[in-house]
Image (cartoon, rainbow, N blue to C red; front, side, top):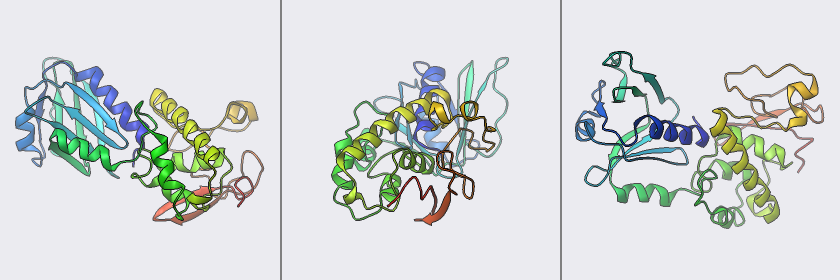
Length: 273
């Protein structure tokens, strides 16, 4: 599932390619036909991201296209050559197009036209998003500091922190030497503040480079004389998807386990209980 930096990047791409201009909207798959007809020919006024939720605003009387990619959703962009974009495949849930560019949405968990009030309801039920300037980390701390749930599970709870996924979860815990099985209530406030500040920096870099890199400069392949990571995830990481490999810092074997249906990765030596 895409993490929050990807959704913020998609919002920025929509602003760059479509904002302030009328768009043609269609639903070749047929599941969004009625709503596509309502936004067809309308001007995209804004594109917003809250955690893993993408929201495309078409103004008063129209509302917002709410997109959640889920596990299988894909959103791709293309340039228009000639007067029309290439014909979409019948798997495209929503196509937006103008004379220069098009965007095709396939396989999302959610694609719905919603009101301003429904958009605010989505925002209210989510925790603070490290990529939003209006985020309040105190809201997350209020829940974490009272919880007996593991910090690893809390970080993936979108009601606690919005936008953090499996990669950022594993990596920020490693970077701060925190055992993923420690209860939220046993976390110190200073530890939470440091993790939040780190998430803000790491996720902003993720938006900028469109990939997740979490290793510090002294631990890059060039600095350590090691081969670069080869993985479809792309970036350089400490523990994510590195089960049974050696830790870059201490040489201990990276462990993995199932936690709440998601694979957890950590170094028992660097992240002691």
